[in-house]
Length: 337
Image 1 (cartoon, rainbow, N blue to C red):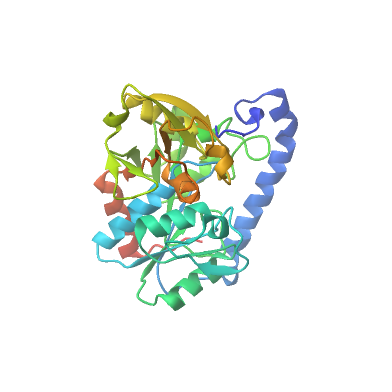
Image 2: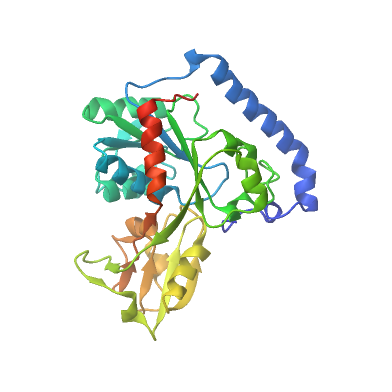
């Protein structure tokens, strides 16, 4: 579970059981809402280009941002011209806005700014996903496919493909909010086009999938990049035998720490809540000692990071069959509400 998550999300404890009646009501309201959109096509806005949703069924980070980056690269390789729409969580935008690659994460949100830098494709943010999508297409008419980041539950925007990223640990006790971490029940995975598994899945999750194809994902990186000069790079081996401070404000910071330890680094972990608004004070410790951040945190810290601060960029490694499956769905145009 993500750092800062309620303890009762981890098991079906007394606190979770006491909240279970509220979860039943939450589930009924969520199901009714989705049903309304399915019954009334007038509530759903279909764009002139296909839409691929990348989302999850649980609160907290599961690895969606690297999947969006991977998907954009695969779409480009197949001849598409993609754009990305996002909620812009943690930003200050009212209405909709296009995100520049050098945008301020405090204004646009950390993940949209990171996606703009990673992908180099147009990115638009806004709570109103259809409005953000329209703004992006108006500004970039060459875009012929859109990727909706964290858009699974935004049913006002019609989608042609649903891609769900699942990290087993984020599913917790398998109960809906607020007794558990789920936005939608695990059975929802039976209805999507594909599941990207960030780590192994348990038997109960596999049992809930039905015929939904599952593709494994791992995150890989091979070099550290200086926050003060992106041209300065080094291998993790350069820090072997030295203490390094690993700083992460993501959904599963322990995964980042474990990845660095697996490379032989002596890691001092510094976990922060997901989407933490970093300040210089957060990094003002252990002067001169190496500090390593995730890419998501590096975009927020580059302006004030002390010397000897590094980013460890990673990319999603997903079997080729996943891209083939998604591209086939696009070619057949299977719309879903």
